[in-house]
Figure 1 (cartoon, rainbow, N blue to C red):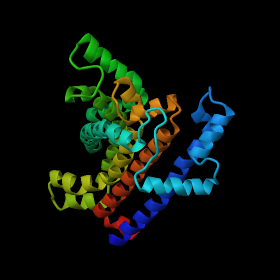
Figure 2: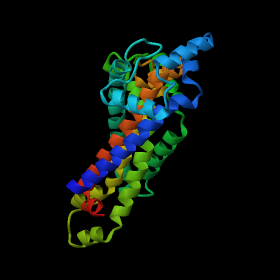
Figure 3: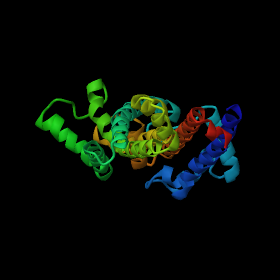
Length: 305
């Protein structure tokens, strides 16, 4: 287990370095970053001065090495629009996004796993068809449209919940449902297929022939094998939800990292955009690493492969 963990950790570090270079290079993909910072009203002299101040006139490799060194020390630069350290802005904004992501993931798992288990336990039944209908609707329905639909129903027609903000737990109910329902269909379908495959294996037939109760077979044997791929998918979905929260946070006016993405792009705040791309990518790499380690702990065949 230790050797497998070290191998996956080494792979994750290499991937993080590659992601960091991509995040750094994004600043230069849209053209001259000095001209972008200077704005439409900036002159050539202004752009040249910005190029000298930010070090854009140095070789790209030296710029990346200097930038990476500052990042490792926790310095993500200075926001052009907010005129604050990007690190302090991200710490403040990621609190709301992480809370929303955790709540949405819990909602998705509580909705998807029981329905997936029931659908896999009784395939082609009414429960199975209802679960598949929920999954299809969730995959086909745009997130912003579902958010607006919930606002109209629960905040306008029946004023039960607030329409925007994230100050109290009541403000987080609708965003949690919208973002969680976005991740639920994939988890539900994978749980269903995993249960069907697990219940058709030879060792499950042997357990039934030995007279082991169905409840124990389901909980101790089938479910353990069916949920192995769900762990990896849940980690990936959590990363997708964090990165995709920009739509939900914009609709519900939650001041999180997702809305900060939109604000930074709108205002051409290059250091903040760069830091957000880096942070969201790192979250995804770390979550994938944790999921792989958990799967290896649950199934020894993975770490021996």
